[in-house]
Length: 488
Image (cartoon, rainbow, N blue to C red; front, side, top):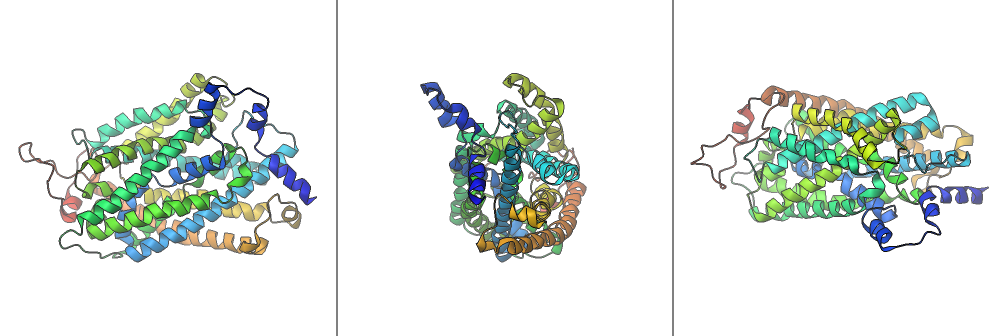
């Protein structure tokens, strides 16, 4: 019986490999496989690591100024482990669902499995509807955040246009992701994306250390409870990037190997986020409270320009990561998901980009919007729902006995897994959604009151007259920045 389970699990996800058997391999197919068509364990690791830390790399110093150095480091480590656990749960549920369906001879060759379908197959339509609502809303605002970040970053190397105009431009650029068929086709992009975030993280670290501490620097965080929990939920958001875990797993040749990939990706990401956030906060302290983008405080240099350009490209990639599952949902809703024509599917996907574009223009609050999305959406989408789904899927003795993947002895088997799941649900519900929701919404409303909706240039310094503008203009003080209101 046990050996039968192993065999059944091992065949899950090998359809593409079976299709390739016996086919000659020419130069074109080899080049396509190298750059375009991925599905290995390494591809999944690159996708997870690249997708997990995008623009949030630039807002973590802002979170450190709200939390203080010690809390900032501890929350990163804690939520990194918590995120890795729930990603592991999602992978277990995916393999369970897929194995059950393949026993029923269901063919997934022209169908991408998504999280809401896993919930539907294991727990029923009510779980499906809740999962679909939270997942789609989170990915929608995740895409919005990437557009906002593009406009925020490009402004620091070209301020001839305001951030709202840059949002129009990058919205059009990001719309080209409709031509990327699936997560199989992100192989080269994931690899390059991770190089880009690695460069940017170490640029922030080294540039801050070389810059040194600003005169009179203060590190007063945590000063207010509302800021403390706002910063904590931004870190919750940082390590909650596994809303696309199921799609990444489905793109793997052997998805059952995913179990530890997210943890390994998180460990690498921590080598980027901890040094960069700590160094920037050490150098600029409380100035970060009114500068949510770390680029805004570092002086202009060729290295900074390179970091900005690389982050822009990476945000294009991350926009595709967040939006591709939405494309799949929309395709399934209008009956285009199994269409073989790439151009027809791309045209059908375009309406998904329009609301993302519009929301990025309404709420251009780079930094505060991350915490709001983290507390209200990420808390349920990638922490609470997966933990509860695992509990209810295996609540009966028969389900536990016949489970495709048994919990490891290192987690305490089923009892240990259940205790960890209950802790995740209670902690995230109270701290992430409860306190975090209150703090982040309060801060978000404050941004609306201060800058207004549709603001042209969020947190931009006052424009100087042409004859006095120069690249070495002093950094505006927090007080001046906080009281300056931009008209739409």
